[in-house]
Amino acid sequence: EVQLVESGGDLVQPGGSLRLSCAASGFTFSTYYMSWVRRAPGKGLEWVATIKQDGSEKYYVDSVKGRFTISRDNAKNSLDLQVNSLRAEDTAVYYCARHTGDYWGQGTLVTVSS
Amino acid sequence: DVVMTQSPLSLPVTLGQPASISCRSSQSLVHSDGNTYLNWFQQRPGQSPRRLIYKVSNRDSGVPDRFSGSGSGTDFTLKISRVEADDVGVYYCMQGTHWPWTFGQGTKVEIK
Image 1 (cartoon, rainbow over the protein chains, first blue to last red):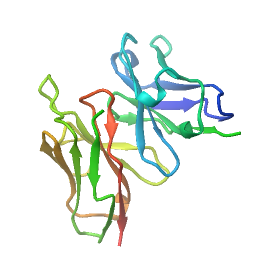
Image 2 (cartoon, rainbow over the protein chains, first blue to last red):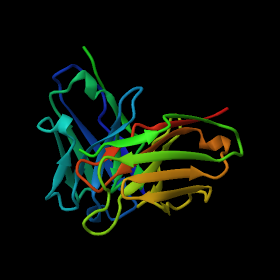
Image 3 (tube, rainbow over the protein chains, first blue to last red):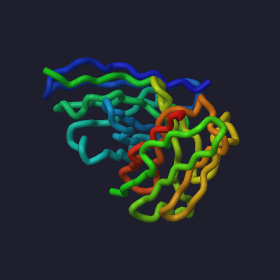
């Protein structure tokens, strides 16, 4: 059974940083693109970042470029999202998703507030 | 960036009746590999998103055949043949052809 389990969400002050993690199991992690998608309160889904199977290519939505970094460890079946210089508008539930969304985690909540 | 425009944004439906959601993209979603990467997702209240349809018209495993996707180029449609109570939620189209991938605004389906 495919499972994606996110962790790392927290309440953080503007300008702060967090590292979100996604533990994958039940499939051959190293053979899939992996993505982060978020949903802010009262808003729709927003794709944030995607990483290629071997980590050689990474793609970001413009609003997070230079602040967020996606990475993966295929030996540990894990996906990370380093989020820096956080802003109030980054407040959202962050989901880990496989490829183009055939499987999703339960999400982890990031709240940016002073 | 490719803009995905859904309509309607709110869709009150009667149980047992059909429903249809439109999704238009600001440019063609035909990839250089010949595929069209247009997906549909359902997000029920309090749950994670679930993919229903991939590459325009392919139903994901476990998705009832009441759901169908169609379209080409820049115009796409999700249809529910007979709405059930379980179908309440927000529906999103998403394009995976061009970077960055983008979602539509979402269509909220509710029962009348």
